[in-house]
Length: 139
Image (cartoon, rainbow, N blue to C red):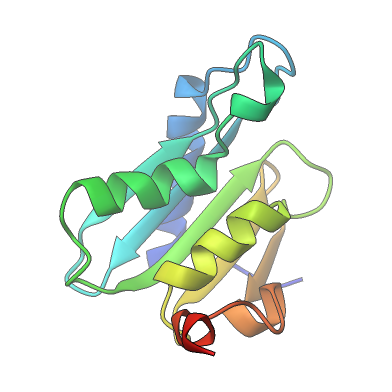
């Protein structure tokens, strides 16, 4: 397993504290995501459940949507961290992987972790090989 770097430890602590804001009355499974942009801005997100489960939003997408809503697309994402109460480092769902692929540059660090501090570092290509790219829509 990998270890958290000092900058990642900052994101880890923010994400761990953010988990309490998750709205999870059905699964009781809290997840938080935090990203840092190249200029140092930090954006957070948590999972938000709904009685109509298909309308639930994952922490990863909530975090990306907060980043977009703030008008920060010109400030590329440099780091993305996800934390959850899993035995191994948490892994994002397929929908979140595709959303991340649209907004994370190929050199962004993706850190998957859990409450015990187990860590796995990934790149976008490792997380979702052969992901759809904007250029694919032109084909």
